[in-house]
Amino acid sequence: MLKDQTAIITGGSRGIGAAIARALAARGANVAILYAGNAQAAEAVSIQCADLGVTARAYRCNVADYSQTRETVAQIKKDFGTAHILINNAGITRDGLAAMMKEADFDDVVDTNLKGAFNMIRHCAGLFLRNRGGCIINISSVSGLMGNAGQCNYSASKAGLIGLTKSVAKELAPKGIRCNAIAPGFIQTDMTDSQAENPLLSMIPLGRMGKPEDVAEAALYLISANYITGEVLRVDGGIAM
Ligand code: NAI
Image 1 (cartoon, rainbow, N blue to C red):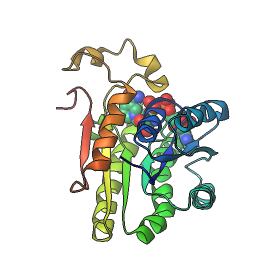
Image 2 (cartoon, protein in one colour; image 1 turned 30 degrees about the vertical axis):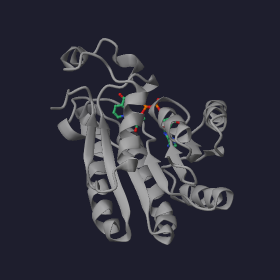
Image 3 (tube, rainbow, N blue to C red; image 1 turned 60 degrees about the vertical axis):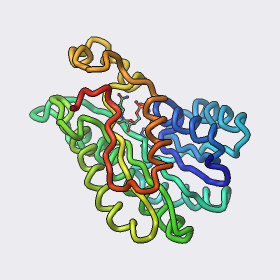
Image 4 (cartoon, rainbow, N blue to C red; image 1 turned 90 degrees about the horizontal axis):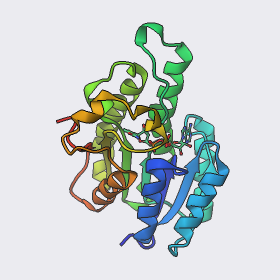
């Protein structure tokens, strides 16, 4: 049970982030849901969580913006008192071949996926240090483990998240704070809507795309696994074996 714990979930308005928010709320955690633009979707997830008997609030916050993340974490501290769990899930794709990619498409992806996670860790670390404990989970990708043609920006950001995870795990382990990563494969969400014809899908050993709930289950496991830090857990039906 996660009663009396507060979890911050970035990109919690849909897809994997929404599934993680609901799973944590179902275990009794209060949830702070950060979203980029769709207030209605974020409010809907927040209401679903509150219906499970916890405190839930949605905050509009661009994770790529350092000062916005600082202000949002300060507001969460005011609203919830503190936080115990941080799920860095917000992410975007801007696919294209490296030889033709626009500079802005590289920068936007790295700023959101990688720097966004740093920004959140930077501002939540003080809360965790004061609590002498905490759990950080960064949502990486099998693209970060294997590379993927057409995704040099995304793969670089997701591989970067793994380095970030391991360094933060080493820095904060002596303070009782754990930091792990999850590397999902193909998960059915808005992000993968356009992938229905991707030939890689037929190569998934378990024979199906993942569901957001499959990733949420892994997040719950890592939250409960007190002796695991600096780990990268694949949730990919075996595709990156
Ligand atoms: P999605 O596109 O359905 O949801 C992404 C969420 O991130 C949305 O809530 C959106 O509002 C939020 N977001 C985007 N930019 C943001 C910003 N600048 N600030 C705050 N929030 C922002 O994506 P999905 O599929 O649920 O993915 C969630 C995470 O899982 C992402 O990091 C993605 O890279 C990763 N992932 C997804 C896979 C998949 O197959 N769907 C596979 C591997 C990793």
